Every structure is written in structure tokens, then in C-alpha cells.
Image (tube, rainbow, N blue to C red; front, side, top):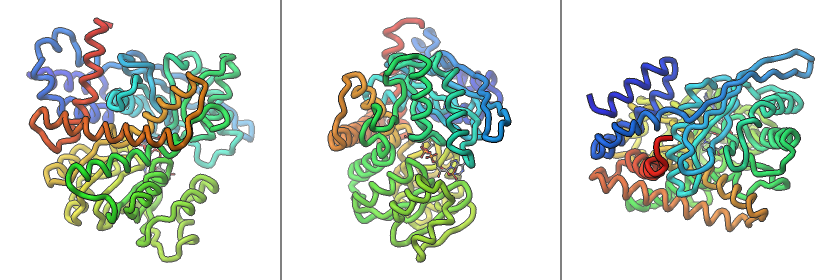
Length: 444
Ligand code: NDP
């Protein structure tokens, strides 16, 4: 049996109830097959793949907190420090009832290669909790965040592990987490990114993942001789990534006509109104049913459906496994030219294969949504030098990073004779740097 197959089999056997983690490992190792087979003997002797698929360490802890009525609740907290070969662990915290160790491991594993792709010195990690922030008061969110950080603060630090936001963790949660870290540890340091602008945050961090997605999409289309301006896009999600993806799409001359949340989706043929969406989601924290009040000509539909709209470009920005094989078929049949992932692993493996086989340009999340973590690393740099850069400075750096990622993944795919296979290109480009650093640092 080949080394790749052996390792995939052992990951499945040793982590039986973690399907998302299996999926991520399969996607990466399968696409790296030619690279690994070239050096199979050395990698096998060094147990390199076994080390790559095993987190350096993982923490699982109890998070007790008290609600507004005095009732005590207990959630589970996680932090997985996956690979620190090229820098301090870096990766978001997700608060969502679906969170379990397998999901955090899949995200942490992806993060290792994504962070490497940015060209910045950051290792990969991820964390979170099965806590559901929906319907909680600010006081309850604060109580949870404080309890979560009371334990997490033992394992993180500005030079060891620097978490950020993810699903369910935005500016409000980062503020409460930072306050508690500072109170317990007694140090004012850049231990979290995505901070508010008054206490060490970076301009353009909020916008970075969505903006970065569009910078990469524009460059990738350009490499394929296509202009983004004038194209119609379907976006899923209505959170941080989706909102700023829609905004940047409009700024670049494209038109985003959909958005969604976990209960339904909106079609606005004139283009999604970003200000209305921000008010609904960031201020009122309400459902998308509200959108029609702002834009009477739009349609609201219950359930899933954004991928049924005829568009040129699809930008999944909600969550994992939200673009299925049937969606891929429908997009391709409708003439969609590109799918670029704003979320982490939103496209299933079968859907990805179908898109690639049907000549739809496909950019994987680890490249396409790397703008968030890249700008987080820029926030770390600003914290270290105790300076703040202007919005334009950060945005220009972000744009350059996304352009570099696009070319690096394109070149890496070409080197292995698989031009246009950006899944492979992104994995190879991310993998090579991590592996070189691991080999240089010995058996650790
Ligand atoms: P938010 O919490 O701000 O928004 C998430 C959006 O996705 C919401 O509209 C939410 O709807 C929807 N959603 C979440 N879970 C589900 C589900 N199970 N089914 C349907 N819809 C769902 O998160 P972000 O925008 O920050 O993150 C979105 C994705 O992007 C995630 O995959 C995340 O890992 C990834 N990402 C985020 C980065 C960042 O900087 N924020 C960086 C890189 C990747 P509802 O409000 O109804 O729950």
C-alpha cells in the first residue's frame, strides 16, 4: 500500500468519529500524492506524514458559566495546537453548537497549510466551543467568554499561540476574551487578533477575509483571461466573510445577488444592499427575513438554494459542506465559471471533483480565505512594534499577499504538470514550506 493510503487509513482508524477531519486529511494528502511519492522513502523513514496529521497538542476543557436567571451551564472548550514549525500557532475560535474535536482538528489541519501559503511566519491551530451565542444577552456572552478564557489563558500568548475569531466569535467576543486574558495574566500583549481599534486591533482586519477572497478571485480570473468586472456572483452566508465579500465584489464592478443564513436565503437581482445587511446582522442580530423591509424587490426563500441562481461566480462564505454535488451540477449547468471558497471546506469532495472535471475554476478556501489570517499576522506585527498602520497600508499589503498566493498556487500546480488544479497547487505550496521547516528542526 502507498504511504499516502497507509496514513489516510490510520487517520480514519485512530480518529473514528471525526468525519470532517478525515475529509480534510484526504483532500490534502490525495492532492499531494505526486509530491509525496517523489520522496516516499525519506518521508516514510522520517514518519513525516504521521507527524503532519497528528496535532502537536490539544486541550479539551470544561467551561461552566451562569446565565441571567442564575442557572449554571456547562460547555466544552477546545484548543488544538496543530503545527508550530514555521511560527506561533494561529487560528480562530469557533462558538457553535456543532463544534466538536473533529471539527476543530479539521480546521486546525487546514490552517497549517493556509498560514504557510500566506508567506508569513505563523503556525496552525484552532479552537472553540459548542456554546451557542444565538439568543444570549451581552452579559451571558461575557460570562461565557470570561470562563472560557480563564482556562484558555494557560495555553496561549503573543509568542506561543494567538487565537482570532471565526463563526460566532466577532469583535464583541474578542473584546471580552482579551479583557479576561489581561486581567488574569497581567500583561498587555497581542494575544488575540481581531481586536477593537481602540485596544490594538488593525484597520482592515474586519474586512480582510471577504476582501481577500475577491482580490484572489479577480487575480485568478485574470490568469484565465477573464475579467471579474461585470460578472454576477452568488454568495452564501451573511456573517463577517460574506458581508465584506459582497462589498468588495461591488467595489470591483461585479454584482453579488444572494446571501443566506442558517434558515433561509435572499435573492436581490439589483445586488445585495450591504448597508442593510450589516444593520440586520451586525446591529439588530436578526434573521434575513428582515431584508425585504429594506429592499421590497428582493425575494426571501426558506431553506437552502443560493446555488440554484444563474451566476458567473459562486462564493460560498457560510460553513463547511454547504455546496453539495447537486449544487455543483446546477452551477455548472447554469454556466458558472468559478467557485472560490470564502468559508473553510464549504464544498464537499465530490462537488469539488465535479467542478474541476467540468472546467469550473475552483479555488480552495485555504488559499481563497487566507486574507483573514494574513491580516491577523499583520495585526501581530503592529502590536509588536506598538504602531498602527493606515487602512490603505494594510489593504495594500493584503492585496499583494492574495496576488502572491494566486501565483504561488498556480505555479506549484504547473510544476507538477497539473495546470489549473488549484487544490493541488495550494496544498503543494503550503506543504513544501512546512515540511522543509520540520525537516530542518529534526524529530520534534
Ligand atoms: P459568522 O459567524 O460571522 O457568519 C457565519 C454565517 O454562516 C452566518 O450567516 C450563519 O448563519 C451561516 N452559518 C453558520 N453555520 C451554518 C450552518 N450550519 N448552516 C447554514 N448556515 C450557517 O462567521 P464568519 O463569516 O467569520 O465565517 C464563515 C466561514 O468563513 C467559516 O467557515 C469560517 O471558518 C470561515 N473563515 C472565517 C474567517 C474570518 O476571518 N472570520 C477567516 C477564514 C475563514 P446564522 O447567522 O443563521 O448562523
